[in-house]
Structure formats: structure tokens, C-alpha cells
Length: 585
Image (cartoon, rainbow, N blue to C red; front, side, top):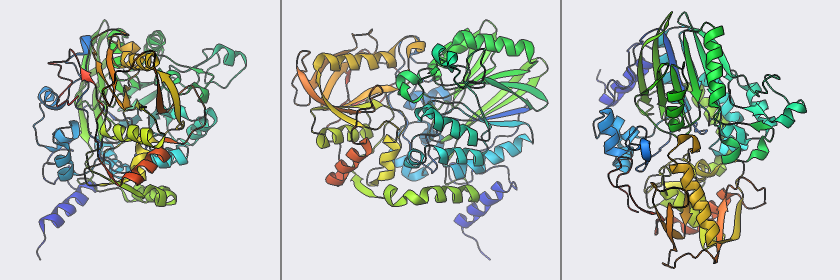
């Protein structure tokens, strides 16, 4: 009997899943990729910012992630070759493809898609089995229930069931809070794990009126922490939800809730846990964004590790941050289910003695999907497949989103608004979620929903002065490039269509944006008015067509989508910044 190399590899992968060999990765470039032998006595598995992606995806990492002031040249503000050099990752490998934008199209065609809940299930089950019963937890940092068509149409309930099947033990939140409170509580009641958020409080008025809360005395809406016995040790997990949800997203979904970084409350809580709970380690499951986590780690003492999310930074090794009480590890586990972070802790009676960390890319061609999870995904998507599967147009360019300024998928959204809504200028939020489409591939309604599926999708067209346009641009730039991380909200620059501008990220508020011009070269004047289209307005419930309908109409009319004009800013004072490569603006 003879057996082909392909059949042999498939058989070996199946054996690996069954636990007969110690690794899953056996195809080209994958040898050893999933080796994660147990270290110490506690294993924490960390996912974050999955954005409702049940299937394997393509997601291009940024070529622009500028660090300004003290963040310049510091993780996570490294891209491309600078990133690979810093972390010692060889070029032209699976890992270099997973972590950077370099040669993205060619590498994506060679290595395929990443993530997918059926593949995650297989890998996570193996990682937990390696740690031994009762020695591991699966943590999710939030942005789990939003980001796909099925999540939108099921109010996130598809992702709640998927997370139960995956075995998520602990969850915190951000986009979860863009459903109405009634739906949030319904989803949480169906979630089999624990939901934690130390920094969500009732407003004074809501407290007075007796609104529902976890703790009436403090006004905390949710349980702030939990204690778990792992590997014979007591480990505290604290939840930290996204601090700026009522500013970055509509507050009318959760009008009674107040958030914020709440550094003082965090320090008081850590002190209380250390003094009263007799724990051996304290870990924060955070959705602050990595720069905020780095600052918090330098100021709040008593935390052993912060496992963070929100900014979609895939960081292969955590940063060790010194503070007056010792050292805190700060990591971030990327997005879209592309990665599983593995933090192994060696914990003694007096605390953490050592650690090992791996951020494992989830290559779907190297991991046999879990059959039960795959069946569930097929069933949950089945009612919507006629709509999701519609082929709207062919991509002539690589379509991607992530990056400090415009992305080609964002440009398509902006072009659609201008054409369908008949506007001179278009604005689109700098969301960091949204999957990628390769040149030559069909753009489906599934792809459009992956880039637009939010609970406030209405579009608008309004007259706006040049002065107001500049004010909007300056405000978003200050959020992105403020030198104090506590004033950053974690998104990217507002995307624009029909206009170009110059940006100096190193300047101060009201000094970063200049030379705003229409595509025809005409300077945008402060006193003139312009017809502007946009979507995702957080302070208005004005009716309008959902953005996905606008984009779908545009794509159907275009048939083949080309980026004829890429509206990226001309940058000043960023030469030599390792957070930018191959920039065409």
C-alpha cells in the first residue's frame, strides 16, 4: 500500500488532534508552530476582539501604527520589518505572514486563512489538555458579539452560544455594550462563563432610582472580579471593560451606565483582593487598549499580568513593565480569532516565580476543525446564506482596513457613500475590525457585513462647513495621537473620501490637520459649506439607509472595484518612525 504526502499529512494532523503526537502543525512552514508544553502550574488562554468571526478569515496587519512621543519605537507601535526584527521572527514564514502586512497577497495565497471557531476549538482543547484538568482558564477580552451579519441579525446570540461551545470561562466587554441593556442582560444570562467589569458603575440618578446593579453600595453594575483555584493556587481575575464606550459608541443603549479607566478604583480593588482574598496571583482581563494598559501597569501595583484587547495589536511577547510594587506583564492578542495567547505561570505560595508566553497564529489549513463546532456554525449561518453569499463585485485591489489612516476597504465604503448618496466628501469611522479580500476574489455581502455590521448603521448627508470638517479631523487625530494614553480611545483616523489633507501626528490639538483639499485640488475653506456623507453617528438616531445597503448598491453597479483615488494624508515629522513602512500618502 502506498500513501501520498498529502494523505500522510492529513492523517498525522488527525492523530495530533487525537493526542497521539504532540503538535498539530505538520505542513510546510508549520513545524513546531503549536508546540506549547506545559510550564508551571497555571495556564491562561487569551482571546480578544474576535468581532463575531465564526469562520476562518483574512486580515491584513497594518503598515502604519505610529507611536508618538514616549510611544515612538515602542511595542505595539512597530510594523513590518521593524516588528520582525524586534521579535526575532524570520521573514517569508508563516509567522511573518501572521504578524505583518509584508507581501500580504502572495503570502495569503500560500498560507491560507486564519482563525475560525471550529479550528480554535481543536487547538484550545489541546492546549487545555496539555495543562491538565483544573489548571487552565479561557479568557475573552471582549468585542465578541459584534462584527458580522449573523451577529447583527441574532443580536449577538450566535456568538454567545459559540462562546459556550468553545468553553470561554471569563469575558469582559466593549462592543457588547452596543446592544440595548435588555439584550445585553439576556445574552449574559445565556453565557455559561462569568462576565466581569470593575469599571462600570450606575449613574447617581440610576442608583437613586434603584436600577439593577451587582453591588448597591458601590453602584457597580457587574461583578468586578472572580477567584479561581488553578493548579492548587488562588488566582484573581479582574475585568476591565472599554473605558470610553459611552463616548466612542452611542450612550443611548446604556444610558444609566458610567465607565472610565478608574485607575483609583482598580488600585483599591487590587489592594482589597491582596489583603482579604489570600490570592497567589492577580490578572486583569482588559479592553483598555495596549497603550492604556502599559500606563496603568506603570502606576497600579499588585497586578501580575494584564491581558489586553481593543487595539487589535498582535504582540508575540508581553512587555514587562516596572512599577513601585514590582513588574507587570502586558500583552495583547490581536483580532478576528487569528491568535490564541498562552500565558503559563509558575506560581508559588508567595506569588509568580516565572512565566512563558506564546501567541499562536491559528492557521486553518494546519488544524483539523472540530466537527461539532463546524456543524453549529453551518446551522447558525444557514438562514442567512442566500443574502451573505451574494457576489456583489470583483476586487481588483487588495481590500483591507487596518492602519492609522485610510484602508482600501474603507475607501470603497467612502466611494460608495459619495456616489450613492451624491456627496462631495464622505467620512467613515476608523474602525479596526473588518476582514480582507484578495485581488481577483468576489466581494460578497458577507464581506460587506464584516466591515459594517453595527447596531447604529444609518447613513446621513448634510451640509458642513470647512471649519467643522477640520474640527472633526482634529478631534479624531487628538484621540489617536495624544501623547497621554489615558486620552486615547483606541480607534484609527476617520477615513475620508473626496478630500486629501496633511497631518502632523507630532503636533498638538488643533495643529495636526492642514491643507485640506477636494480631489480636484480646490482648497477647503473654513467659511464654505460642503455636502458631506457619513455613517455611524453616535449622538443621533436620525433615520437613514443602512451603510451596508449603500455599499452593496455601489458594488453591484461597479462590477469590478478599483481604487482610483486613495485618500490618504501627506504626513509630516514621521521620518524614521518604526511604526510606518511602505506609505504612499
